[in-house]
Image (cartoon, rainbow, N blue to C red; front, side, top):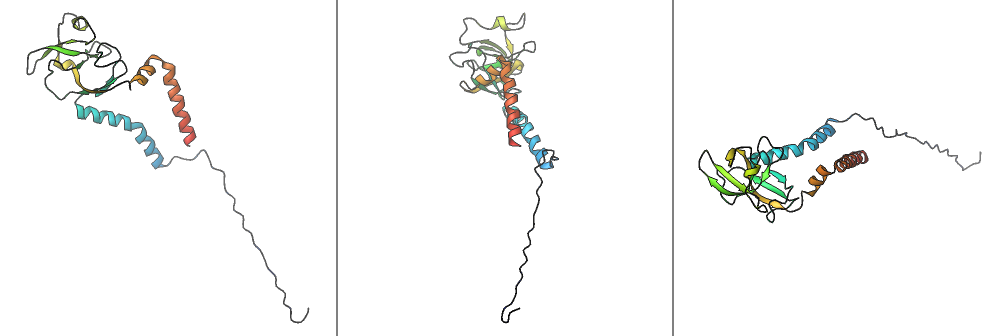
Length: 187
């Protein structure tokens, strides 16, 4: 060894950490389960809230015919209100007979009686005759309790997606596939 020199030794340590690849079989957390439940139930809760506010079992619906043109056209979304005790001439009640699969949206052209019992004659704005032929056999009027709501507003043409989904079932299938793909990509 030489005089005046010092020998130094350096030691280098390296630590390596290994990371596991992300696992696709993770157990869902309570938070993720609650989020999924909220997403699945929110539309139903919103619908029920609208039912409660409007007093109608059907707070909105899509017009599927041109019988009320020019007031409403096929594909318009109509909003109903069922908190009024009486239907007046000129109102547009939505009538749903228990024996019919779909409701009828036509204007009240005559109203008979007041109070508990009210009878209503309806007619589509675009029709030449009243609706007696559309009522249950032997009837020439609609009862107030058959009215699920009176139209209070509408959005033009926004209901076409619903009509398309009902008339083209393959479109509904495409929507389900699209939703599944979005769900897989987000994970």
